[in-house]
Length: 251
Image (cartoon, rainbow, N blue to C red; front, side, top):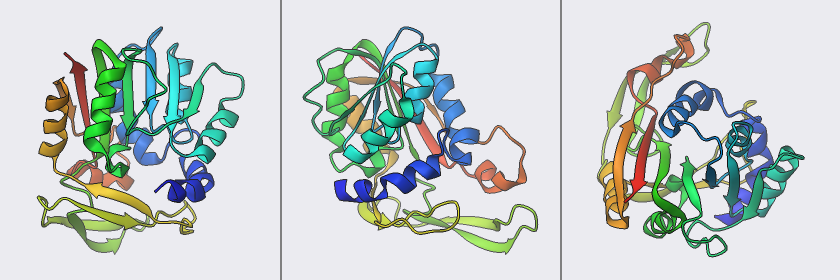
């Protein structure tokens, strides 16, 4: 998995383009920021930071941010993009963040990462260790029930003449309870295939919630955000939630 991200790092950074994809900007990021609340002066761990655009964003909001990713190339890109700002980036594996001290963060953001991580229980246990009592963990993921790379898919119609997206007639789901590992190739904005496939893990919502509770978290909120915009491009995402966001606190 590490080699996948090492080889895909540059194209991934181009896809994110310093501010996220349209789905991030119009759907996911507003939900994450709303649930996170004020971050000024708070210590934030961006767990699985990728090229670091959210780390840089929350640094600009007055937070003290540490971004961690297990891809050395991704961390190199993140440091280059951060330039002279105060964001700290380091290589680390979410399964064992041994270089980070107990109770050293007020907020942990794990944004679209756990669905690519094999060690779910270990990662959530590490997050609990690293948070102060009462600290907040924010998890976001592609919605497990409506993930068209996992248990479901859209039945498609014709392409919309303006958005050039195919019309979604209805969404069909099967084998939601079958947890499994799978691989998919991502593509650039120009349709170029990434050099390596990316490994994903389909898990049920109850699996995520159970792991949080067993690790000592209290569930504070859950959101299934829909786009803030009325842009017809997001017709499908207004009908079925594309993301799931969970806010939990350390008891």
